[in-house]
Amino acid sequence: MSEVIATQQPQTFPSDRPGTGHRVSILGVPLGFGSSLAGVDIGPAALRVARLNQRIAQLGYEVRDLGDMRIVRPQGTSEPTGKVKYLPEISAVCEELALEVRNILGGGELPLVLGGDHSIAIGSIAGVSSFYHERNQTLGLIWFDAHADMNTPETSPSGNIHGMPLSALLGFGAPELTHVGGFSPKLDPRFCAHLGARDIDQGERELIRQLGMRFFTMREIDERGISICIDEAIAIASRASAGYTVTFDIDALDPGDAPGSGTLVRGGLTYRESHLALEKIAEAGGMRLLEMVEINTALDINNRTAEIGVELILSALGKTIL
Image (cartoon, rainbow, N blue to C red; front, top):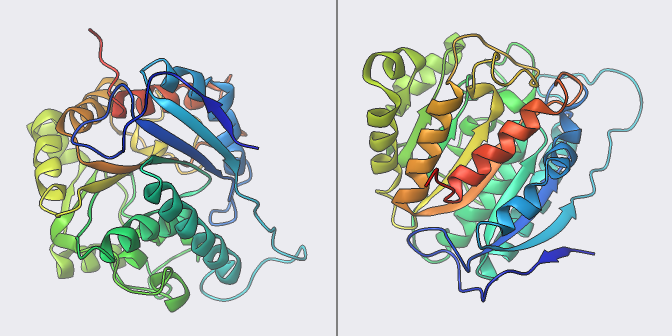
């Protein structure tokens, strides 16, 4: 049974900017076997414990909580073999997730997807892309992450799919991932921007250069400042006719602020840099899906990282200091 927190009279989403009266549908995707560490599958529950639903409603939204998708666990106890771990299981989850996201958009609501590991982005973004693809519109993307997430089965050092979602959405990798939703690619790299990278594999570097996709690495953010970089990222993503999706891997933040992630890399975005970026996204308008992933409760301290995740979601939905 879905939980509904009623506030003010809703209107159809999306419009240019988020705010009072809009509708948000929350969907948890407790998938953890796209990575190699236990605990990330409890991320959606941790965000709800931090009063996510109630705090979104306080911004003036009508909130509908669809609960968590049912995830079928891999059978057996042996380590998966092959270049891509748990490929059939993750592909099936992403196909179902894509349908769920399409239904949310069809109801005039903003999908808020809670992970789980970042492999779920294959399904969530496929859902948005297919929704607008049928309307002959293109989709942009803003991707926050310490990693490129652009490995393929041939380049991945681990075989973990949470390191492959962006390449799959761009049409590279296993067909079971690239063709979720029935078509490929889902995104045009000209309309995509990546922020926060500081740990990129060699195969990913080659693909990034081949595509000419815009990466705002931590060095560039250090040199130029987050304000200029996010303004340029929003401009890139806004060139798409349908608007853009936003997916936020919590490891984009520095581990000193967000310790609860299984893929920590020092030197990330600060707490305030992250809030400023998401506040500017809210001000710009055009966001068609928001996703928060890779919060690992087994590694967190007193639910601190989940609390930050909720605060960042609120900023993306229009919360301001004044």
